[in-house]
Length: 278
Ligand SMILES: [Zn+2]
Image 1 (tube, rainbow, N blue to C red):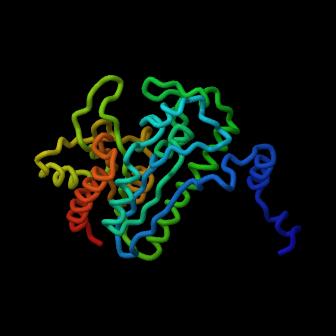
Image 2: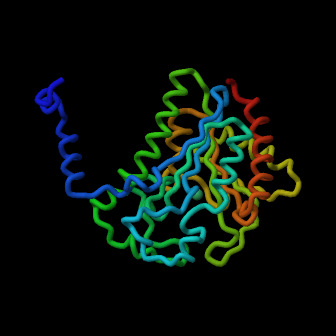
Image 3: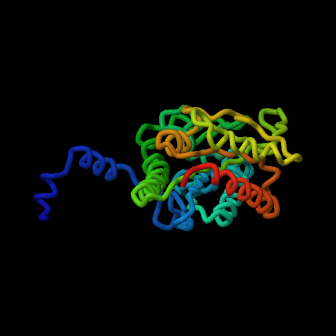
């Protein structure tokens, strides 16, 4: 096909996108980490695991968002320990794992793009100066550089599985802080769900048998359309059994804790999967 043909067939929306690229430099340079990492699992495993807040990378173009290194090391920038648990759990289950390495302060991949907290101006007690009065093109650039490619990769894997008849049980791994706004949280793990509680209820029952654990039922917060994205889009809307897990960060801060939690969860998920037709 000649260049004239391509021009004639190109929809106007493509033209608009090209123009935006000419005035707006790409947010991620070639030597920076890509917006997702993948560990492919076994082709027979029903499990697809995501970790939206696995990392605290910042695109070089955004500097430090006006925050100190100490603030960027804290939970406000990422889910401490969650990536380590997700990797180990994926290995245990032979699951397909997709992780997002950029700080949630750049753009939150577990929020709809129109949520006020998609690009947070405050997190707990900390203001995020680099997110104040962010322009529409800069907002779009963050979405186009990180949010869209990450979620596109998840959708590609879901569509591959649907085409090949491989079932999906969707697990979103997160972590939460021991205290928030000065209030201590008693739970060791929280099981979050929204409209479809099938897998959540099973996990709550299985975790409830572990005598040493304090288990939150939609605690420390409940899942919702406004505050969650993955389980809504990839669980509820596609009819896949799903759950979002929140593990307390002090329990998974080191390798030993991450391994112990991954082994426990793998055992429970293996049992849970026997209750879904494959
Ligand atoms: Zn999270």
